[in-house]
Length: 274
Image (cartoon, rainbow, N blue to C red; front, side):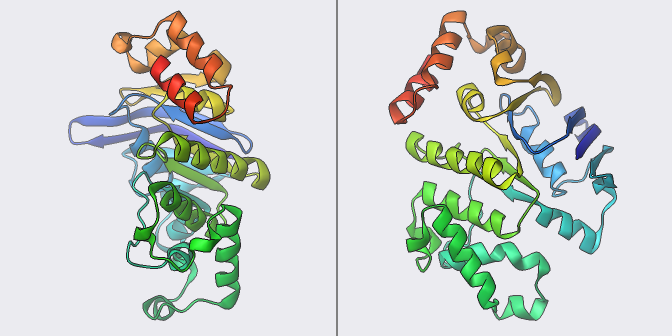
């Protein structure tokens, strides 16, 4: 399905992603974890072709994604939708129009200039918003919504593209614990109900442990762990976050036990334990 081979990105003398390789053979919910500067965001931007690779190859269903240009590249970016930490909405535009922006890659320039959308697309956008529990906010300006609601609008915009892969770059980093749980629940449902692959950069070990089928750990641009959430031991956490991260057997065990209990308090306890 998706094959990443020796993917590398250099910025001058600095290597942000260093010879990363992994395969995704079937739809999965994958979490990528690591400290700041580990290369997580650059990796996702290369998968989406927002950033070009210095070396290596991305292949999807046998097609060389790294070689795509022009319309073919834009089509791939529709198939591989991106969700950002800061939402990337148009603040003064209404919610449903923000969602309809997910169709821009397949619309004419004239239709885009005059903000013209087929009635079927408008109904579909509202249906997606309803699925995410925010249909009543469709006529409001995006800037009037809370951070959690805006992130769900961004998810709706991604789904409007009908993607095969959803990439989420730190989707809950700027959210409070309750909204973070809602957003992660939505991403998990999108994987389970739609059969889509979801790859999310996550900033906490417990979130990856709770929601993901597979976890990839990065350090200094390289993959240092690739396995199941159950394999995220204290030793592995030190490998991912560095020996100075301060993990202990007690703290890791407490976090793993806590995240099995739902709710805002549980998330706070898990984060405090780590």
